[in-house]
Amino acid sequence: MADAGDDSDLQLRKFQKELSAGTVSLALLAVLGSAAEPMYGYQIAKRLESLDGVLSGKQSALYPVLRNLSAAGLLDSHVEPSVAGPPRRYYRITEAGRLTLQQWTAAWRATRDSVDAVLEGGNP
Amino acid sequence: MSSIRMNLHRPPQSIPEYLEQLRQSLAGADPALVQDALYDAEEYLRSELAEQPGKSEAEVIASVASSYGAPDEVAEIYRDTEVKVQTALRPPAPKPRSSLIGRFFGVAADPRTYASLFYMVLSLATGIFYFTWVVTGLSVSLGLVVVLVGIPLLILFFGSVRLLSLVEGRLVEVMLGERMPRRPLYAARGRSWLQRIGDMFTDVRTWSTLFYLLLMLPLGIVYFTINVTLLSMSLSLIAAPLALFPGLHLNVWMFGIDIPNQAPWLLPLVSAVGVLLLFASLHLFRAIGRMHGSIAKHLLVKTAQYS
Image 1: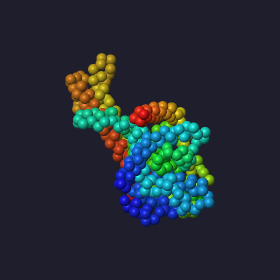
Image 2: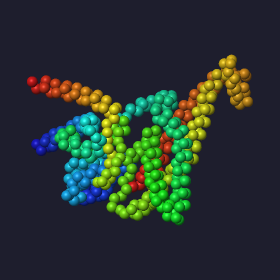
Image 3: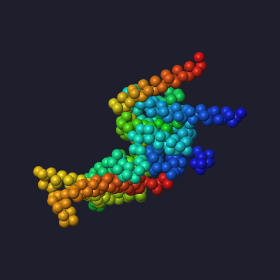
Image 4: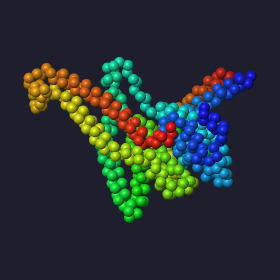
Protein backbone atom coordinates (compact mmCIF):
# COMPACT_ATOMS: atom_id res chain seq x y z
CA MET A 1 0.00 0.00 0.00
CA ALA A 2 2.67 2.44 1.03
CA ASP A 3 4.59 1.51 -2.09
CA ALA A 4 1.70 2.34 -4.38
CA GLY A 5 1.26 5.70 -2.66
CA ASP A 6 4.92 6.52 -3.04
CA ASP A 7 4.80 5.49 -6.64
CA SER A 8 1.87 7.71 -7.59
CA ASP A 9 3.45 10.55 -5.67
CA LEU A 10 6.61 10.10 -7.70
CA GLN A 11 4.59 10.01 -10.91
CA LEU A 12 2.80 13.21 -9.90
CA ARG A 13 6.03 15.00 -9.16
CA LYS A 14 7.55 13.86 -12.43
CA PHE A 15 4.48 15.13 -14.27
CA GLN A 16 4.60 18.48 -12.50
CA LYS A 17 8.25 18.80 -13.34
CA GLU A 18 7.58 18.17 -17.00
CA LEU A 19 4.67 20.60 -17.03
CA SER A 20 6.73 23.32 -15.44
CA ALA A 21 9.66 22.70 -17.79
CA GLY A 22 7.35 23.53 -20.68
CA THR A 23 5.58 26.50 -19.18
CA VAL A 24 8.19 28.28 -17.10
CA SER A 25 9.59 30.23 -20.08
CA LEU A 26 6.08 31.40 -20.93
CA ALA A 27 5.40 32.42 -17.32
CA LEU A 28 8.66 34.36 -17.14
CA LEU A 29 7.96 36.20 -20.39
CA ALA A 30 4.44 36.99 -19.18
CA VAL A 31 5.66 38.36 -15.84
CA LEU A 32 8.19 40.58 -17.58
CA GLY A 33 5.70 41.48 -20.29
CA SER A 34 3.30 42.94 -17.75
CA ALA A 35 5.97 44.55 -15.56
CA ALA A 36 6.19 48.33 -15.77
CA GLU A 37 9.86 48.39 -14.82
CA PRO A 38 12.79 46.04 -15.32
CA MET A 39 12.91 43.32 -12.66
CA TYR A 40 15.78 41.30 -11.20
CA GLY A 41 15.98 37.58 -10.61
CA TYR A 42 14.88 37.56 -7.00
CA GLN A 43 11.85 39.80 -7.67
CA ILE A 44 10.74 37.61 -10.55
CA ALA A 45 11.15 34.50 -8.41
CA LYS A 46 9.06 36.01 -5.62
CA ARG A 47 6.39 37.16 -8.08
CA LEU A 48 6.08 33.64 -9.46
CA GLU A 49 6.05 32.20 -5.96
CA SER A 50 3.05 34.36 -5.08
CA LEU A 51 1.19 32.93 -8.09
CA ASP A 52 0.94 29.48 -6.62
CA GLY A 53 1.36 26.52 -8.89
CA VAL A 54 3.11 27.91 -11.94
CA LEU A 55 6.44 26.79 -10.69
CA SER A 56 6.33 23.40 -9.06
CA GLY A 57 10.05 23.18 -8.41
CA LYS A 58 12.59 25.42 -6.81
CA GLN A 59 13.19 29.04 -7.68
CA SER A 60 16.78 28.32 -8.64
CA ALA A 61 15.40 26.82 -11.85
CA LEU A 62 14.44 30.30 -13.02
CA TYR A 63 17.91 31.72 -13.41
CA PRO A 64 19.16 29.47 -16.20
CA VAL A 65 15.90 30.03 -18.05
CA LEU A 66 16.20 33.81 -17.68
CA ARG A 67 19.72 33.65 -19.02
CA ASN A 68 18.75 31.55 -21.97
CA LEU A 69 15.79 33.77 -22.84
CA SER A 70 18.14 36.69 -22.72
CA ALA A 71 20.67 34.88 -24.93
CA ALA A 72 17.88 34.21 -27.43
CA GLY A 73 17.18 37.96 -27.62
CA LEU A 74 13.77 37.79 -25.97
CA LEU A 75 14.95 39.68 -22.89
CA ASP A 76 17.30 42.58 -22.41
CA SER A 77 19.45 42.79 -19.31
CA HIS A 78 21.72 45.23 -17.55
CA VAL A 79 23.55 45.28 -14.22
CA GLU A 80 22.98 47.87 -11.53
CA PRO A 81 24.74 48.17 -8.22
CA SER A 82 22.50 47.75 -5.19
CA VAL A 83 22.60 48.78 -1.55
CA ALA A 84 21.97 45.22 -0.40
CA GLY A 85 25.37 44.08 -1.59
CA PRO A 86 25.86 42.34 -4.91
CA PRO A 87 25.08 44.15 -8.15
CA ARG A 88 21.76 43.01 -9.60
CA ARG A 89 20.97 42.01 -13.11
CA TYR A 90 17.72 43.57 -14.30
CA TYR A 91 15.69 42.03 -17.09
CA ARG A 92 13.30 43.74 -19.50
CA ILE A 93 11.26 42.21 -22.32
CA THR A 94 12.32 43.10 -25.88
CA GLU A 95 10.10 43.64 -28.95
CA ALA A 96 11.04 40.17 -30.17
CA GLY A 97 10.09 38.92 -26.72
CA ARG A 98 6.65 40.51 -26.93
CA LEU A 99 6.04 38.93 -30.31
CA THR A 100 7.15 35.54 -28.98
CA LEU A 101 4.96 36.01 -25.93
CA GLN A 102 1.92 36.53 -28.17
CA GLN A 103 2.68 33.42 -30.19
CA TRP A 104 3.38 31.32 -27.11
CA THR A 105 0.20 32.59 -25.44
CA ALA A 106 -1.84 31.52 -28.44
CA ALA A 107 -0.13 28.13 -28.49
CA TRP A 108 -0.69 27.71 -24.76
CA ARG A 109 -4.41 28.58 -25.02
CA ALA A 110 -4.88 26.16 -27.89
CA THR A 111 -3.15 23.38 -25.94
CA ARG A 112 -5.09 24.14 -22.77
CA ASP A 113 -8.43 24.16 -24.62
CA SER A 114 -7.77 20.90 -26.38
CA VAL A 115 -6.57 19.20 -23.20
CA ASP A 116 -9.66 20.51 -21.39
CA ALA A 117 -11.89 19.25 -24.18
CA VAL A 118 -10.33 15.79 -24.00
CA LEU A 119 -10.62 15.70 -20.20
CA GLU A 120 -14.28 16.74 -20.24
CA GLY A 121 -15.08 14.43 -23.14
CA GLY A 122 -13.79 11.45 -21.17
CA ASN A 123 -15.96 12.39 -18.18
CA PRO A 124 -19.38 13.50 -19.46
CA MET B 1 25.57 10.77 -3.44
CA SER B 2 28.39 12.21 -1.41
CA SER B 3 26.77 15.65 -1.50
CA ILE B 4 23.55 14.31 0.00
CA ARG B 5 25.45 12.64 2.79
CA MET B 6 27.33 15.84 3.40
CA ASN B 7 24.12 17.86 3.63
CA LEU B 8 22.57 15.44 6.07
CA HIS B 9 25.73 15.83 7.99
CA ARG B 10 25.49 19.58 8.31
CA PRO B 11 23.17 22.16 6.72
CA PRO B 12 24.93 25.38 5.67
CA GLN B 13 24.97 28.17 8.26
CA SER B 14 26.25 31.06 6.19
CA ILE B 15 26.29 32.23 2.60
CA PRO B 16 29.92 31.22 1.97
CA GLU B 17 29.14 27.76 3.38
CA TYR B 18 26.08 27.44 1.17
CA LEU B 19 28.11 28.43 -1.88
CA GLU B 20 30.89 26.02 -0.92
CA GLN B 21 28.42 23.14 -0.68
CA LEU B 22 26.88 24.15 -4.01
CA ARG B 23 30.34 24.18 -5.57
CA GLN B 24 31.06 20.71 -4.20
CA SER B 25 27.72 19.39 -5.44
CA LEU B 26 28.52 20.74 -8.89
CA ALA B 27 31.95 19.11 -8.97
CA GLY B 28 32.72 17.83 -12.43
CA ALA B 29 30.19 20.09 -14.17
CA ASP B 30 31.23 22.60 -16.81
CA PRO B 31 33.24 25.26 -14.94
CA ALA B 32 31.41 28.03 -16.80
CA LEU B 33 28.10 26.63 -15.55
CA VAL B 34 29.48 26.46 -12.01
CA GLN B 35 30.50 30.11 -12.13
CA ASP B 36 27.02 31.15 -13.30
CA ALA B 37 25.26 28.97 -10.73
CA LEU B 38 27.32 30.44 -7.90
CA TYR B 39 26.60 33.96 -9.09
CA ASP B 40 22.85 33.33 -9.27
CA ALA B 41 22.75 31.69 -5.84
CA GLU B 42 24.69 34.51 -4.26
CA GLU B 43 22.39 37.12 -5.80
CA TYR B 44 19.33 35.29 -4.50
CA LEU B 45 20.71 34.66 -1.02
CA ARG B 46 21.86 38.24 -0.54
CA SER B 47 18.54 39.62 -1.79
CA GLU B 48 16.68 37.31 0.59
CA LEU B 49 18.93 38.41 3.45
CA ALA B 50 18.29 42.07 2.64
CA GLU B 51 14.50 41.46 2.54
CA GLN B 52 14.44 39.96 6.03
CA PRO B 53 16.48 42.29 8.17
CA GLY B 54 15.37 40.81 11.53
CA LYS B 55 16.59 37.30 10.87
CA SER B 56 20.06 35.88 11.21
CA GLU B 57 21.97 34.53 8.24
CA ALA B 58 21.52 30.92 9.38
CA GLU B 59 17.72 31.34 9.69
CA VAL B 60 17.46 32.90 6.24
CA ILE B 61 19.50 30.10 4.72
CA ALA B 62 17.33 27.49 6.42
CA SER B 63 14.21 29.10 4.91
CA VAL B 64 15.86 29.32 1.51
CA ALA B 65 16.15 25.54 1.33
CA SER B 66 12.41 25.32 0.62
CA SER B 67 12.18 28.21 -1.84
CA TYR B 68 15.47 28.36 -3.73
CA GLY B 69 16.55 24.84 -2.93
CA ALA B 70 19.25 23.14 -0.89
CA PRO B 71 22.71 23.16 -2.51
CA ASP B 72 22.46 19.66 -3.92
CA GLU B 73 18.96 20.29 -5.28
CA VAL B 74 20.16 23.48 -6.94
CA ALA B 75 23.10 21.60 -8.41
CA GLU B 76 20.79 19.03 -9.91
CA ILE B 77 18.48 21.71 -11.32
CA TYR B 78 21.39 23.45 -13.01
CA ARG B 79 22.78 20.25 -14.49
CA ASP B 80 19.29 19.53 -15.77
CA THR B 81 17.64 22.79 -16.79
CA GLU B 82 20.56 24.47 -18.45
CA VAL B 83 21.10 21.70 -20.91
CA LYS B 84 17.42 21.29 -21.64
CA VAL B 85 16.58 24.95 -22.18
CA GLN B 86 19.75 25.57 -24.11
CA THR B 87 19.04 22.83 -26.59
CA ALA B 88 15.42 23.99 -26.88
CA LEU B 89 16.30 27.60 -27.69
CA ARG B 90 19.24 26.93 -29.97
CA PRO B 91 18.98 26.07 -33.64
CA PRO B 92 19.44 22.31 -34.06
CA ALA B 93 22.88 21.13 -35.11
CA PRO B 94 23.08 19.78 -38.65
CA LYS B 95 22.61 16.05 -38.87
CA PRO B 96 25.93 14.21 -39.00
CA ARG B 97 26.38 12.64 -42.39
CA SER B 98 27.32 9.01 -42.56
CA SER B 99 29.25 8.72 -45.81
CA LEU B 100 32.88 9.79 -45.98
CA ILE B 101 32.20 12.18 -48.88
CA GLY B 102 29.19 13.61 -47.08
CA ARG B 103 31.29 14.26 -44.02
CA PHE B 104 34.05 15.88 -46.05
CA PHE B 105 31.76 18.28 -47.93
CA GLY B 106 29.25 18.60 -45.09
CA VAL B 107 31.65 20.99 -43.38
CA ALA B 108 30.29 23.71 -45.66
CA ALA B 109 26.82 23.34 -44.13
CA ASP B 110 28.06 23.74 -40.57
CA PRO B 111 27.59 27.32 -39.29
CA ARG B 112 30.47 26.70 -36.85
CA THR B 113 32.87 26.57 -39.78
CA TYR B 114 32.12 30.10 -40.91
CA ALA B 115 32.01 31.41 -37.36
CA SER B 116 35.50 29.97 -36.81
CA LEU B 117 36.64 31.46 -40.10
CA PHE B 118 35.50 34.94 -39.02
CA TYR B 119 36.91 34.46 -35.57
CA MET B 120 40.32 33.71 -37.11
CA VAL B 121 40.20 36.95 -39.12
CA LEU B 122 38.93 38.94 -36.15
CA SER B 123 41.58 37.48 -33.83
CA LEU B 124 44.28 39.59 -35.48
CA ALA B 125 42.45 42.77 -34.47
CA THR B 126 41.52 41.61 -30.97
CA GLY B 127 45.01 40.14 -30.52
CA ILE B 128 46.68 43.47 -31.31
CA PHE B 129 44.27 45.30 -29.01
CA TYR B 130 44.71 42.91 -26.06
CA PHE B 131 48.48 42.88 -26.41
CA THR B 132 48.70 46.67 -26.55
CA TRP B 133 46.32 47.03 -23.63
CA VAL B 134 48.22 44.61 -21.41
CA VAL B 135 51.69 45.90 -22.27
CA THR B 136 50.69 49.56 -21.91
CA GLY B 137 48.65 49.01 -18.78
CA LEU B 138 51.31 46.94 -17.06
CA SER B 139 54.26 49.15 -17.95
CA VAL B 140 52.53 52.46 -17.17
CA SER B 141 51.16 51.34 -13.82
CA LEU B 142 54.25 49.39 -12.75
CA GLY B 143 56.42 52.33 -13.75
CA LEU B 144 54.36 54.69 -11.63
CA VAL B 145 54.26 52.41 -8.57
CA VAL B 146 57.35 54.16 -7.21
CA VAL B 147 55.42 57.44 -7.05
CA LEU B 148 52.35 55.61 -5.60
CA VAL B 149 50.00 56.78 -8.40
CA GLY B 150 50.72 53.43 -10.00
CA ILE B 151 49.00 51.39 -7.28
CA PRO B 152 45.41 52.51 -8.02
CA LEU B 153 46.26 52.39 -11.71
CA LEU B 154 47.45 48.80 -11.34
CA ILE B 155 44.24 47.84 -9.53
CA LEU B 156 42.15 49.49 -12.24
CA PHE B 157 44.19 47.66 -14.84
CA PHE B 158 43.56 44.28 -13.22
CA GLY B 159 39.85 45.12 -13.10
CA SER B 160 39.90 45.90 -16.81
CA VAL B 161 41.61 42.57 -17.49
CA ARG B 162 38.70 40.75 -15.79
CA LEU B 163 36.28 42.66 -17.99
CA LEU B 164 38.26 41.85 -21.14
CA SER B 165 38.26 38.20 -20.10
CA LEU B 166 34.45 38.24 -19.90
CA VAL B 167 34.15 39.99 -23.27
CA GLU B 168 36.52 37.53 -24.94
CA GLY B 169 34.54 34.72 -23.30
CA ARG B 170 31.36 36.00 -24.94
CA LEU B 171 33.13 36.15 -28.34
CA VAL B 172 34.46 32.62 -27.90
CA GLU B 173 31.08 31.25 -26.88
CA VAL B 174 29.13 32.93 -29.67
CA MET B 175 31.62 32.20 -32.43
CA LEU B 176 33.32 28.99 -31.38
CA GLY B 177 30.51 27.39 -29.38
CA GLU B 178 32.54 26.72 -26.24
CA ARG B 179 30.44 27.29 -23.13
CA MET B 180 31.97 30.25 -21.26
CA PRO B 181 30.85 32.10 -18.13
CA ARG B 182 28.14 34.69 -18.61
CA ARG B 183 28.62 36.17 -15.18
CA PRO B 184 31.79 37.40 -13.54
CA LEU B 185 33.15 35.81 -10.39
CA TYR B 186 31.90 37.38 -7.21
CA ALA B 187 34.68 38.95 -5.23
CA ALA B 188 35.01 37.19 -1.90
CA ARG B 189 32.88 38.90 0.76
CA GLY B 190 33.93 39.77 4.25
CA ARG B 191 37.47 40.59 3.27
CA SER B 192 39.10 43.95 3.58
CA TRP B 193 40.08 46.09 0.60
CA LEU B 194 43.72 45.22 1.00
CA GLN B 195 42.97 41.51 1.19
CA ARG B 196 40.84 41.72 -1.93
CA ILE B 197 43.61 43.45 -3.80
CA GLY B 198 45.97 40.76 -2.54
CA ASP B 199 43.54 38.12 -3.83
CA MET B 200 43.73 39.68 -7.28
CA PHE B 201 47.47 39.10 -7.36
CA THR B 202 47.47 35.62 -5.90
CA ASP B 203 44.57 34.44 -8.09
CA VAL B 204 45.93 32.05 -10.72
CA ARG B 205 43.25 33.15 -13.13
CA THR B 206 44.47 36.73 -13.20
CA TRP B 207 47.84 35.55 -14.46
CA SER B 208 46.47 32.99 -16.87
CA THR B 209 44.13 35.66 -18.29
CA LEU B 210 47.07 38.02 -18.78
CA PHE B 211 48.95 35.20 -20.49
CA TYR B 212 45.97 34.50 -22.75
CA LEU B 213 45.64 38.17 -23.72
CA LEU B 214 49.33 38.34 -24.63
CA LEU B 215 49.16 35.00 -26.44
CA MET B 216 46.32 36.31 -28.59
CA LEU B 217 48.73 38.45 -30.63
CA PRO B 218 50.93 35.63 -32.00
CA LEU B 219 47.92 33.34 -32.28
CA GLY B 220 45.96 36.06 -34.08
CA ILE B 221 48.78 36.57 -36.57
CA VAL B 222 49.07 32.83 -37.20
CA TYR B 223 45.29 32.35 -37.55
CA PHE B 224 44.94 35.33 -39.85
CA THR B 225 47.82 34.20 -42.05
CA ILE B 226 46.63 30.61 -42.31
CA ASN B 227 43.15 31.82 -43.10
CA VAL B 228 44.06 34.34 -45.79
CA THR B 229 46.72 32.12 -47.41
CA LEU B 230 44.54 29.03 -47.69
CA LEU B 231 41.46 30.92 -48.85
CA SER B 232 43.26 32.94 -51.53
CA MET B 233 45.22 29.92 -52.72
CA SER B 234 42.21 27.64 -53.08
CA LEU B 235 40.01 30.35 -54.62
CA SER B 236 42.65 31.24 -57.22
CA LEU B 237 43.12 27.56 -58.09
CA ILE B 238 39.37 27.26 -58.55
CA ALA B 239 39.35 30.32 -60.79
CA ALA B 240 42.19 28.98 -62.99
CA PRO B 241 39.98 27.92 -65.96
CA LEU B 242 38.99 31.56 -66.39
CA ALA B 243 42.39 31.92 -68.12
CA LEU B 244 40.79 30.43 -71.24
CA PHE B 245 38.46 33.40 -71.65
CA PRO B 246 39.74 35.47 -74.56
CA GLY B 247 39.65 38.93 -72.96
CA LEU B 248 41.17 37.82 -69.65
CA HIS B 249 44.90 37.93 -68.97
CA LEU B 250 45.42 35.33 -66.31
CA ASN B 251 48.71 33.53 -65.93
CA VAL B 252 48.63 30.04 -64.50
CA TRP B 253 52.21 28.84 -64.11
CA MET B 254 52.72 25.63 -62.32
CA PHE B 255 55.80 23.39 -62.10
CA GLY B 256 57.33 25.45 -64.90
CA ILE B 257 54.44 24.91 -67.30
CA ASP B 258 52.29 27.71 -68.66
CA ILE B 259 49.12 25.67 -68.27
CA PRO B 260 46.61 27.65 -70.42
CA ASN B 261 48.99 27.65 -73.38
CA GLN B 262 50.81 24.34 -73.10
CA ALA B 263 48.33 22.04 -71.37
CA PRO B 264 44.83 23.59 -71.22
CA TRP B 265 43.31 20.17 -70.44
CA LEU B 266 44.94 20.40 -67.01
CA LEU B 267 42.86 23.45 -66.06
CA PRO B 268 39.75 21.55 -64.81
CA LEU B 269 42.08 19.39 -62.76
CA VAL B 270 43.64 22.49 -61.18
CA SER B 271 40.14 23.74 -60.41
CA ALA B 272 39.18 20.44 -58.79
CA VAL B 273 42.31 20.52 -56.64
CA GLY B 274 41.24 24.03 -55.60
CA VAL B 275 37.82 22.79 -54.52
CA LEU B 276 39.39 19.98 -52.48
CA LEU B 277 41.82 22.43 -50.90
CA LEU B 278 38.96 24.81 -50.06
CA PHE B 279 36.99 22.13 -48.24
CA ALA B 280 40.09 20.80 -46.49
CA SER B 281 40.78 24.37 -45.32
CA LEU B 282 37.22 24.67 -44.00
CA HIS B 283 37.88 21.52 -41.96
CA LEU B 284 41.09 23.05 -40.69
CA PHE B 285 39.30 26.29 -39.72
CA ARG B 286 36.66 24.41 -37.80
CA ALA B 287 39.31 22.35 -36.02
CA ILE B 288 41.30 25.47 -35.12
CA GLY B 289 38.10 27.03 -33.80
CA ARG B 290 37.54 24.05 -31.52
CA MET B 291 41.13 24.02 -30.37
CA HIS B 292 41.06 27.73 -29.61
CA GLY B 293 37.82 27.30 -27.68
CA SER B 294 39.50 24.85 -25.35
CA ILE B 295 42.57 27.08 -24.96
CA ALA B 296 40.28 29.94 -23.94
CA LYS B 297 38.37 27.70 -21.57
CA HIS B 298 41.54 26.60 -19.83
CA LEU B 299 43.10 30.01 -19.47
CA LEU B 300 40.06 32.23 -18.85
CA VAL B 301 37.92 30.04 -16.62
CA LYS B 302 39.29 29.10 -13.28
CA THR B 303 39.06 25.36 -13.60
CA ALA B 304 41.14 24.41 -10.61
CA GLN B 305 38.70 26.02 -8.23
CA TYR B 306 35.84 23.73 -9.22
CA SER B 307 37.47 20.39 -9.68
